[in-house]
Length: 411
Image 1: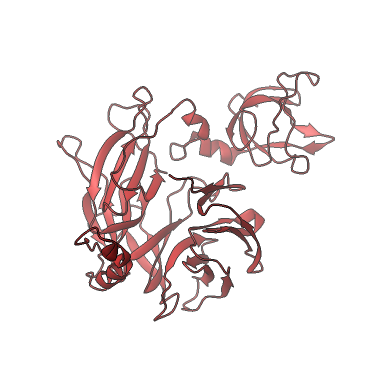
Image 2 (image 1 turned 135 degrees about the vertical axis):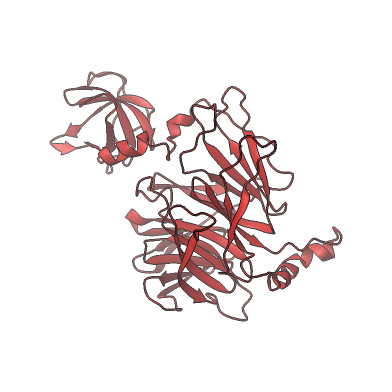
């Protein structure tokens, strides 16, 4: 096989990964770390059954020599699909970021609430390699776009700032030229007093009820006029799906769902009053709707309750998980016209901050203020809690297999 062939590690699960050596010889020095199952590597040289590689993704040494088979059992398999991913401009390999120290930098005056790496290929005129990062500040009602290609400058370049019509709850890119923003009403406090701060959530809810039709979910066109002195995305469409502030967006397939680099097909969105699923148009424009409503469930967490659905996670094109502030998880079958969840799991925790799925393991991970909860998605049951000293504010999946909790540490 030729240089550049991509291999996926399929063996070593029972031993903590594949043994990696510095050289081709089986008696050469062994590296301290192992190349774990699920890693993806790129071929440098193949000599007999020994592979000299550089790592593309996963956990393990960045480079070394490994065996393709052990006692007739395959340890690595050639992966055409992974090769396609690695050659695509839509997916950024971790190795592409080696040597790039791009932070911290003053992105927002207020706290940063959302960070989104652009999953689509994009190129700025005059730049051979470009990638974008979107950030938003909930309190500022503002979205910023940064170019991460300027390695020499070591500071991301601000491409544009977008004032949004409300408090920014979430952002998601649905194409290389279209961005969605989920917003809530923006009740400006009269003073900075503790009284007004304590009453903030109530005033947000009250003003959410006064929003106009479609003011909570907005689409923006990212095709800018490069010759303009101050190019800013222009408003494209608004969608009358939610009334009481749209809190969370989730696309299928997501960047880490293992389904290649194709554009997302479905959008899940949730608010106090409704849970929606919409089909995403491949090329939205002024004359073409970016979202086409496909399914909805009114009052997903009940009327007259104090909790609001704030978290979304796709399991498949037919199954969508949601979570509220009180730690109640629900599974919805979005392939049938029903407004009732098919499964409900009560975690018995508060301050739910993130839910995410590891489909191959049949596991849902829920981060909350007391730690992490693990849920068996096939049985729809809580497995256990892992309690932590600090609140877990987020969590992410690495390569769809390994998860890493991010704990609050004064940031």
